Image (cartoon, rainbow, N blue to C red):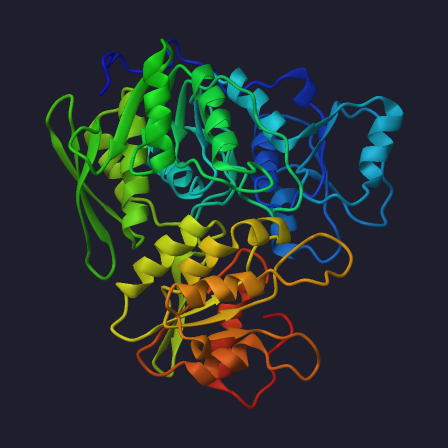
Length: 495
């Protein structure tokens, strides 16, 4: 329980965001990637002279949005100059060569990771909220932008809320930053942010190779991050954050606030009820004993808990509960986070961007509540490194579905692999009780059936198909709907 309830406030009003010299004229590589887009939009809005590049094939609408923000976009094949740039910022997830990095090195221009740049912005903001964890950071970070809308915050997110950009600079003196590293393919260990936020919200602590190879290293990294913050909000329904709570209690450190389902939490999720269109949520603030009610336009108990975490973080910042409740009720979700793609021939298709086993488990459990029919899962495992290391847990998660189709593992690593981590996932799912006949691999080759064809054969009226993945799986839902509508018509290439 918290002992010091002094709210974290901004003090004197500020005129707007200001930048460090190193981030005043940056060049951002792979600006299309999650997290990089939000960083580019924020920096441009804050007055930086931002240059950026993206590979061929990048979504034209996304690039147009980035250019409209004032970013100077260098397209492949066009003239390129790094002279005058203050730094180069890259995601660090793709180990392949980068001509931009070579040019920066030749000119003595510093190269920094995305999280390092984001850490500088967090340290420079008058008041900052950083959301971190080995998984499940996107939803609470996005909810916070709406919960605190009356304070005119700026933000840098990995995934944009519905109707809002991934990055936004403002004059409110408050920055919300998603520091979660679980936003790109897991093949290279990315740099971490070493910053001192006003409030750090920790969503979950778990093994997440290669970023954190095991639970012990994840817990140690979370403790180091927590001890740099002024205040820490811990989501104590997670075993890892409960252990972090115990560690922080041993020695003097930041103010600690807890949110969860237990009665000893500083903010307690009392109830969540899905109405078919919204989740109706009741939370209690233990310091005042008051109950607060709001709605969330996203299904699932895990998302209700994310909203409670955002509510608790707002209270730590000194925000009135009524204002937080109104802001959360106005939040419309994040595309692809358990959202409805469409319905054809009685088959409902929904989308999930889950990557970590805990996220996959939570989304499949929520999907079960949204239909009286069967749940069919189409999973695109994320990264050879993580899929191999966490195959047992991924398989246990997949076993929650009635039928599952395992898509090829998504990876940015070049070359051909002789092994297939999906075999280990399959064995784990069967061990968890899924009949072998209900678990299929999507093959590769010109004669192999497509994912749409496999799912269309399996699905029946009343069933729910959940596409799970953050890469090629994001297109599968609309392609499946087209195939259900016109099975003898070729699917357009742009779907």
